[in-house]
Amino acid sequence: MKNSEVQVRRKPRQSRAKLTQEALQESFVRLLHERSAAEITIREITNLAGVGLGTFYEYFAKKEDLLALTIHLQVKQHAEHLKSYAQQQLELSTVVEINRYIATIIQFQLQQIQAQQWLWAQTFLLERQVSHIETYQKSYSMMLQMWQQIFAPVIHNAEQQLRLALNLHRISYGFISQSLLINPHYQDWDALHTDISLAIQPFLAAVSDI
Image (cartoon, rainbow, N blue to C red):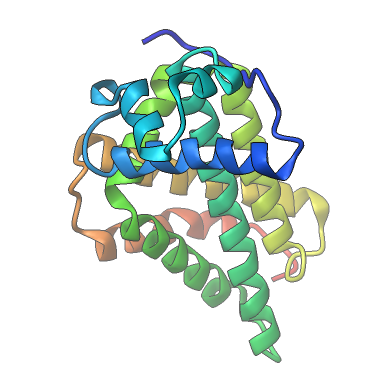
């Protein structure tokens, strides 16, 4: 499968057009819960979305473009959920202990991914097959900014924020993606949480204003 950038032929400016594109994305995701992307046809996607084949090509040149966009939106939604959860934790606490704060967010992240485990396993696989390097960099940057925003209320040094965000993303993304790529039915989530928490400890210890 050839790498491609996210290329959308027609941007959904009107509400109806936006709903159509979303229906195509949602149909693909529903099918992806059942089997691999390589086995899913454009015709199946359009049939499930309730639109004609020609409508698909109004928005996407090929299936890989829909795949790449779906991956980006999956990562974006995940980042938004994590930021929202982190904000809730701050609002519920009068005193924030950074180690517990981060451990709680990592636990939430793992729970969110476990809840859609097959989809995430396929997402990590597809990311390597269809995402152009610029698309991958965009998602990487988005997740890095997310972690910086999560750390900002408890770490006030910008350089330390960036370093911790960078290393936590490297660790969590690497541990989670490798676990699901090797075994899409991975089950040892408690151990994975422990391993990520242990791996991030040296970087937390280096933060001077904890």
